[in-house]
Image (cartoon, rainbow, N blue to C red; front, side, top):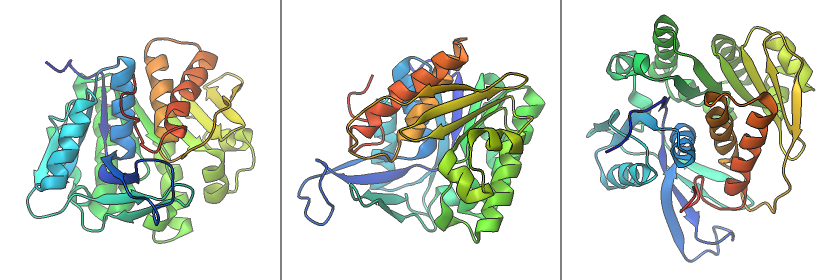
Length: 298
């Protein structure tokens, strides 16, 4: 029996097609099909660490959607709040190691989610809700859904974790992304953002600059790739922990792993430096693999 979730994540997950070994997509022969989505990745890493987690979304009522649900459940994630949509497909994306990713998600089942979906979610019954800046970029209805989640969580006194997770190609303009993502981050209790994202969105050059843009967020984490990460708690100085050294295979998904490691430690009362270290330790598992949540990861 799946444990009652402590964390609820909400957002699109697609089927990820990736070469079985780290080689270019053009020449690869064998492939894996795995779940790939920021929020379900976080849920899967949390479950592996021992924090019961649920993922809520929509998938197509198709073979890829059924496969995706089964695989997410195999990671120990509760999928009871995932809707099956017979009139829209499950999204898909393809990893090309060393050359990024290609998305096939237009018109997906998850992009059709709307504010009423929040009425089906157990927000008042969890310790934390986790969302990302990908969801509001998927469609107008998904944008409104994020506001509904934040409103419902605030009313229930449940903190919200928000990963900026910039996907520039999904936004109509850079200005639209900058304004909306800053506004959403300001409403969250815990915010994760890469320094490179903050530079692209708001011209921020340092973690302290990012803190200046989000002074009232209870807990802000600014990640700077191989340099490390800095966290700021309200009323306290920033804490920096260097990144761990690892041979890089593919960095896509590392931010989700970091967030899960950090949140797991936070929910268990760890100090800021311990939270950052837990994030780094989780991230290196994904950086060294082609899957967003490496098979057999615990």
